[in-house]
View 1 (cartoon, each protein chain N blue to C red):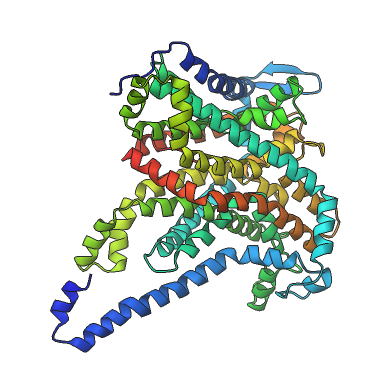
View 2: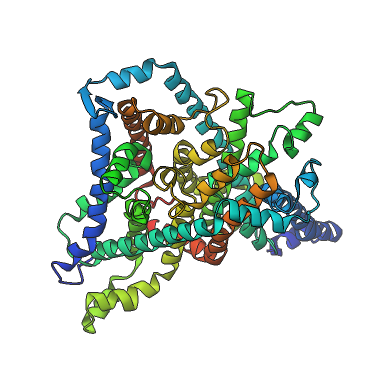
Length: 294
Length: 295
């Protein structure tokens, strides 16, 4: 291993201290407080807290509303992750072909990375507007009556499309970087063996790319679970009815719009924490010390 | 590349030229066609938003009208005024630059300390920092908000920035990069009589340019696109962030003025897009270099 270069004894701690203090104050302490709060019933107007053991959790699992959010979120994550990964992989593999002039495609495909979920939602709200949307208009001509504001299924399809579109740029960035790291001679050797593009992709490219794919799988799951809040808030606000009331949106409403559900919101946070912890552990197990980017 | 093909195909010259033609002309042309289609599909919503931002309501009531209108000046001016876009852009730039810069400084210092000094409990410290990955904002949102209220940081720039300063992403990125560097680099510096600070500023920072650029890009865009936290803690126009401004453009009218809304949207997209275009090379290089470090 490396021998430590500089002999200073105090300097390194001074360099680490700001990060460590921030992690404790803004991450660890609030997380512990979330956990603690999840065992209480809180009345925000009187400030009274009553210890109720696991009641917040049992109530959640007995509530149709929570189960509804859980189901929708599950479907949403599954659809977004699968399509976002498949489409961006296809685009990245295409754009990384060693053909003259393909650099421009690599640049253009990254553009959606600059977009926020809220912006993606706004633009797709325009395209899918029930009265003046170009998408709804063309679907109508095909005989499909698409109305995201009244039809639950259409609303879910709508948020899925906007969410997938927004994350494409991010995924393409990482797939392109991953593809660039595949040694060119490996690909050439396999081409000389007579493997066609299709076999070459499944036998060589896809397996060699699997660390990137797996990393993106985890990151896209986190994105679909949390970052899509802005998309929901700016377009459907959980509706119609509760059709798009994703877990994160429900958490926001219970924690900040409703004064009696603070304990329940904390319990929802704790359940999300367990979900993230499982995901992150899988990530560490399989990918080692690979960096997490957002 | 053609040596093996020509030897086997020598007997059939026409077939060989046809194969070469297919490989050199037909295939690239076909692929260009596919990619143009793909890029068009991906960028069409953006293009449509830009066109619509120039149209009046009379223009966009004709559905599918892709001809740019003449209301651009009116739409952009209205959006700018109605959502105080100028002020919100300034607010968001302050937040995004502060957080990106702060994260770079803090994570670089911590990584520098962990790699080049003997630090007691360094594994524990790295573990502690990695813990932040388990703890995205939603899992600690209620207590964090209360902490901010107790600190009287609601509607302040401290409230929008300080909770984001700690960066597991940055620390991992720099740890990985520093591990790939030869130990001789620092040894040589020390033999030359250079102290740690001198080494950090004269050698480490300059050779980390690409990674710094990549991290700045990632964090700038991340902060520019923040929504939930600004919605909770930045309600006054003095601190309000651009994404919330877009929400206001939607909420102010009973009927959405799409031209104005898209004008606002386009303005909000421009800054992160410029940062992306400027630093794109750093991002790609930083990611590739980081990967080599792992393998």
